[in-house]
Amino acid sequence: MDREVLIEAGLTDGESRVYLALLDLGSSTTGPIIQKSGVTRSFIYEILDKLIKLGLITYVAKDRTKYYQAADPKRLLEGIKEQEDHLKQSKTKVEKLIPELMAKLHASNQSEVRVYQGFKGMIAVHEQTYNKLKRGDAHCYFGGAEQPKEHHLFWQRDHVRRGKLGIKSKILFNQDTPTQVLNNRNSYKGCDARYMPIKFDSPTYFLVYKDTVVVYIPTGQNPEDMLAVEIVKQEVADSFQEFFDEFWKRSDPRLQIN
Image (tube, rainbow, N blue to C red; front, side, top):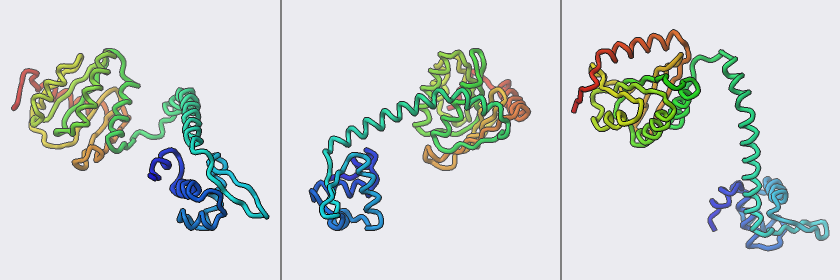
């Protein structure tokens, strides 16, 4: 039997071994359970106690010796249902707590630099734009080389969301970016995508908006090989915005580079 299914249901490796062993053994003392499951003697009682609490095994005492037996496997489904209910309750509590946590985060100006890692980190740092930008505001991206397919799919979905909220996007792509990518971005509401007016070979790219600058640094070919450094400081953002604006003035919205 595939123990991975039991592990995905919430059991540990040792708990799944013991439970499956008891299904085969029937009523048993600890000796045969240890032998069949391969669990060490030092952990067997801890695992058995946990399985009893989960309602997955029962025991009876005969002549001061405990005999353990597997309970109805349907209890696994009940356990998953209990986990789901608990997660829903936790989610509700966290949702109620978020405003207070956000207030504390904004009140505390201790950290001006944060580092995010991987594709999910890239998404998380971009998500901050929706916390600061309102209808009519814009964010500016510039630089960067060709991105993995997973990134393009995310940006396409995000541009739909951004357009519906009335937030604008200005993008300066490296000159080696495929024309179809630029044309795709320009097809979204409120997006103006152009080529950099100069050759810019660095794979690093930048995001500027309000008081924030994000430096995206690819560190490999895998989508997870990405670092995003977020700098929240008005003076730094202003200097990057001037840098972007200068390139933007020199860019040509009609230019197509093949």
